Amino acid sequence: MPRKIDHIVIHCSATPNGHPLFRGLPGQPGYMAAVDVIDEMHRTRKPPFKRNLDWRRRQNSRLGAIGYHYLVYTTGAVATGRHLDEVGAHAVGHNANSVGICLIGTDRYSPEQWVALVELVVTLRRKYPAARVCGHRDLSPDKNGDGRITSIDWLKTCPGFDVSRWLSQGMTPDALNILNGGREG
Image 1 (spheres, one colour):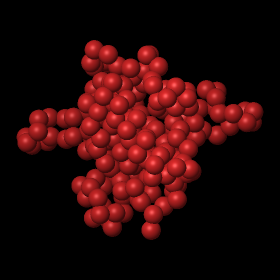
Image 2 (tube, helix red, strand yellow):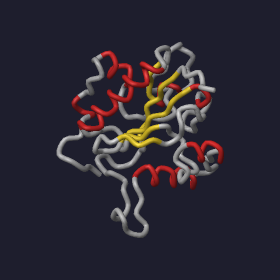
Image 3 (cartoon, one colour):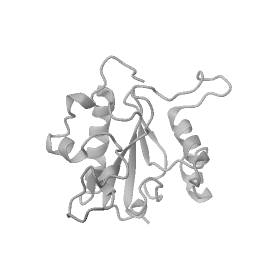
Image 4 (tube, one colour):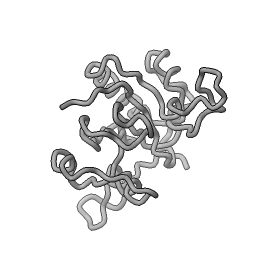
């Protein structure tokens, strides 16, 4: 049975901007795609994330821990993690009713990533029209009780840009969040 989705949550991998996260060379022993690296990060965290074996049988059986539903690579390629009907492990208190998207990087993303993010958000909004699109930081508690979630409330800065601003600008990123000229960090 499909889950009721009320949030589409955008995250970052908190890794160097422009670094693709791939390890090794394709076809060689030890090679890992970015989705495998994120899965390893989630498996080795304390406490580790774990996926139910039934869901693993349905989608991405090799990924035993990944918390996100989608990853957006620096090239703009989109990889799947958890099945859309599988509860994620990406936003405490919101996992049961959300879809998690992770951009590889911290706060500056390639033009290809921005294009892929727009396409993914548009697709997910069609599927879940009532869902609020937000950044992980926007789900922080209102620590000062003023009725707004602002930078003093954030538990994390993820995804490194203001999602509501991005949406209000027609999903056009601010120039400071666009990675130009390749890898940083």
